[in-house]
Amino acid sequence: MKINFIYLVLFGLCLLVGCEKASYSGTSETDGVKEHQIEASTSAPLSESEAIVGEYPLIYPAVITLIDPRTMEIVKSFTPQLLGYGTDRELYEANIKKVARELARGSKERTGYDQTMVLHKIGEDGEIIEGNPGIVLKESELVEKILAASPKGDHIFLPLYILETNLDIDIPSLDDVTVASFTTYFNGEESGRSENIELSAKAIHNILVGDGDYFSFNIMVGERTVEKGYQPAPEIINKELVMGIGGGICQTSSTLFNAVDQLGIRITERHHHSLNIGYVPTGRDATVSYGSLDFKFQNTSGAPFLIKSYYGKGSLTIAITTSHQYKDLLKK
Image (cartoon, rainbow, N blue to C red; front, side, top):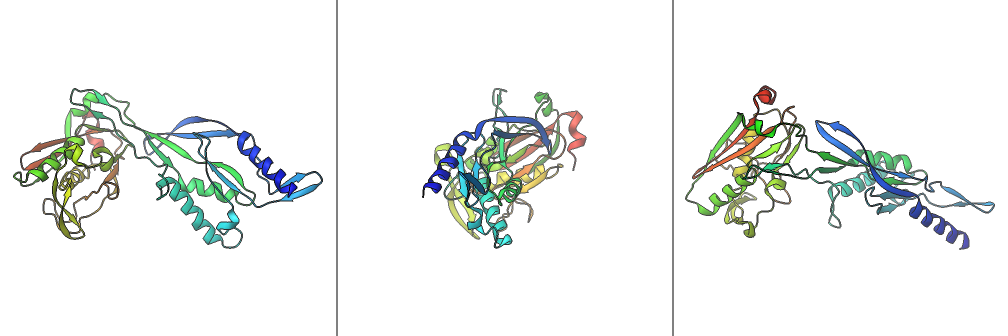
């Protein structure tokens, strides 16, 4: 019991003094996005499977400790053997992939580290409303680090990366020329649905999309609530029309999809309605639901552009504009 107590003291001291303040590394570029990795330095914490106490080796199970490099908080500790290490490799790899996935994307118990980029926007007065960078926990990198540390145990800093928007350009020039547009129509007499389309269209108007930037409809439009002015209107759920707050905004997301799909961008998430919706050709829709279904894309065209929306009674047009120097780059 004394030997075990000494080990616990040594291990506790290691956790307290083995980590120093986190710092940012240099800048790299991934798919056109400015990317900064969050790093932390350590002073070689205890990670051997044997510790020497007096003249006797102390054998103890390996422990993996995962640490947030920004706060130095221990977010998870586990013994690899309890997850299948040494007995079932496939099971063990599946378990640590699940650990990485839940840390990145979240679970019922905690919010994930991944945060979608919030893009800059031009306000009504012409001022730039700044967004926020995205955060990505690279799951495959974390899995590799855990596999390498599993035999002896170690402290592992989560591989977190900050994704910054890429807009080092003359922003006013992005309104020079229209490179793509799409228009859909609706019954303007349906007041609730029309109001929802107008509000969501206004939310994505004048959004600046830099080269490599990521766009999320749900992030840019936000939650559809009565407090924000969204109205009850019919929406499709499981092949049935039901009333819901914000019904109709899928027309906005679908119109946007048909506009940006004319460009050299990469669709990263899109879902179909369970019924034919009529205002776009079959298979050309993009249904959304806050907190679950989203419409996302990455600008892989090599050029920045501006999203503009024009709402009229009974119609919605989404146009994509850019400067003259970029118009050929944006073509699909």
